[in-house]
Length: 326
Image (cartoon, rainbow, N blue to C red; front, side, top):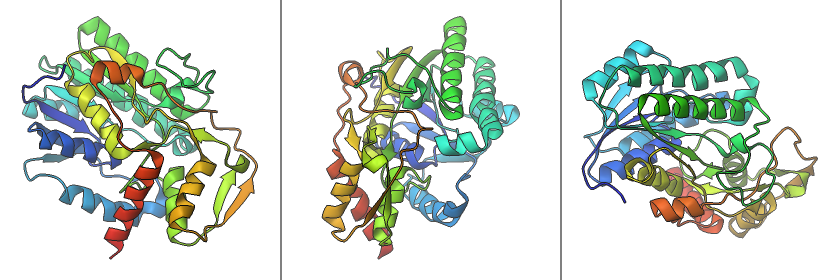
């Protein structure tokens, strides 16, 4: 069940790719939203594109959305924000969102992802009005999939810094929540894609290169399988998890629930860009071998129903880019 009461919701990282979509959906439902964000992009070549798409995200916000500049690691700023706005629910997305970047700048990844979460936990512990913390984890906590579709009971054995920090934060949140009676909900997304992404995920790279008439690089012949999830679907999953009375102290896979190969993605792009060219390179063995995730728990408890197949999502993505290029 989803509560009908209007909530005050603080979204850490709420101006980001996923956070901004969550914010809009919550406002559309009549909830009061506060966005706390550092407005920073970790991909140097994408800086100018980040500013362009950030403006698009912010223009999509209601004037009622309160926007606060702040760093997740700033205990004083976090505590001040909590006391001033007294949110009922906190959605935490203020982390380095990419495995490659986290592995490259591992010290900063540990500082932002883990220490930032600890700062948040301390701030929540200093007040008595936060009802729930919703945390954006990752399917990287599973490491190499031992079976697919992987459900929430799949062993967690991350093989890189990114997955390790995500699992560490899950455990910190669960331990703190259990000990001090703070409700939590943990969400594990996978391969999110769609309009305004500037984090150089594989889907963005392929779509941008297709528009630029550049060759697409297929690692391992394109056999790598991912559970591609359109951004509107993941945002809807977060909203349901934040508002559901039955999501208390639960973990959910929130994805499309379907494994598709990189070759599938290229074939879909070729229906829009018939002259698209590809080059095959050896597989990247440093990344976990993944596939579909089991989303039956989210469907049963949250009523989550992803709407976008990869074909439909890529079509929406391409149409959006065409519209902003006019």
